[in-house]
Image 1: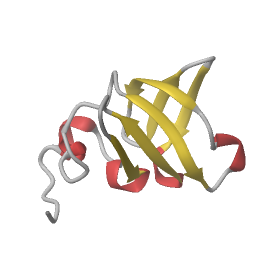
Image 2 (image 1 turned 90 degrees about the vertical axis):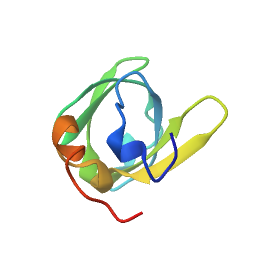
Image 3 (image 1 turned 135 degrees about the horizontal axis):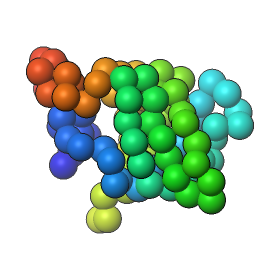
Length: 88
């Protein structure tokens, strides 16, 4: 999984951290992605947060690699994102 193809992969179960957000209280939220809807990610850590995708920059930890991606690139239902064409 790379930065270019993460939008086609399953995000549930990945470790995520909010790096930047338009709302300051969202910055620093860290945990595992528990659920994903069209416009939100549910992240569970110390507690469970529902984070809107379009206002955050997220860092996913893939073990040996960390990938940062803007949440607006992830907008859409997971199954519909597979059908979208993205510039590579």
